[in-house]
Length: 202
Image (cartoon, rainbow, N blue to C red; front, side, top):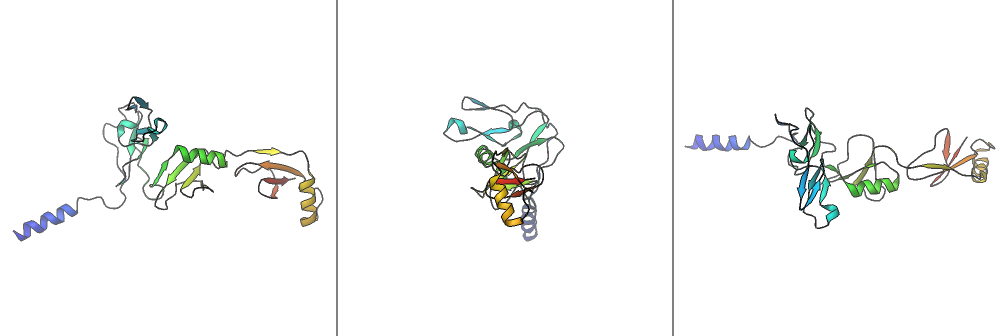
């Protein structure tokens, strides 16, 4: 009797997930259109229905099951996650760095306003997305990935650049073309960063 009880306890403990294990696609992967009804509103593929009372927040990026993903995709999750990300059949979710980050519309808006990228992610537990991403300067839980959305515009007067670099570098006219840049954008060419949003280029 003692042996039998010990065996059952060991077997039960051995059934849990070991570490942050990625979910594998099923054999019927991708056999859905991803459209989800959400209290009279249709969430598009790649979004899931939330319990938020605001209509604009009914559908959020991510997935809770394969039904939220488009054809050729499945809902990839890591162990312990309630919300995953739609990825192509045959691929494996990235678990570990970035597994606690979710695409977020508000984060994307914040990133666009900061000029730091078009794809915003909200991260928890000190995690950050995989890839070339920049942390928001306003909310440290937001990370901005993708193409830089900031822009640079040439300014008409060169006095600011001329005066500054003659004073500090002693080379008149070397960096005489001023540009005003939004967000984290930088002008093309050989330039020096003068202050918060002004660059001086040659």
